[in-house]
Length: 228
Image 1 (cartoon, rainbow, N blue to C red):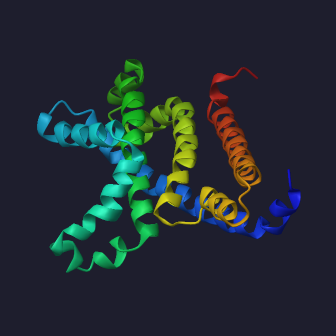
Image 2: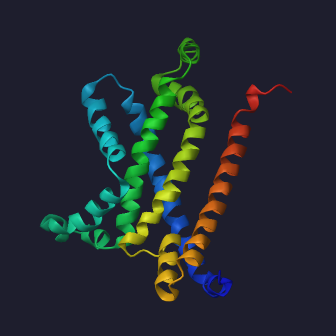
């Protein structure tokens, strides 16, 4: 194994690391912002409200992320009303297309994670809030969502890791993320072992950091359940 190849190209990996962290963090933030209200509406018994959200989550959870990214990156250019509009400024850029696909994908998964946590809220907590005279919106804000977030955290931690690993697909549409950096170095030096093993180490380090942060957050949020 030639470590000189790795050391001489660490700057390429760190540039890729920056792109990966931006893509993953922004898509997770955007996905979570939209997933919270969608998850609440997803619990509605009204098919007019629940149905479109179910279709959205079913499509994006039932199709590969790579296919979704290709549809956005290559497909939007086929529609004249997009090419002739203001939106083409964004959709002609690979970076935005990857970010858009990642955000929609993680939003679908997060919606179902939070929806399941909401539906598993103990009935007694909701009844106590009603007895205290809380309105529906107040119950959701003070009781249901905080309780749901605690239960959803382990599953959402897995979603963060899956999103990190899925972000490696961005290199397919010319973005230099961690995997893109490895592909670039491999094409230059024809050393796949050095190139991709280094990328794997970067992903492992980020994954361990995510697990540690989620565990710390889970420990903090469950403090009321521990005995002093």
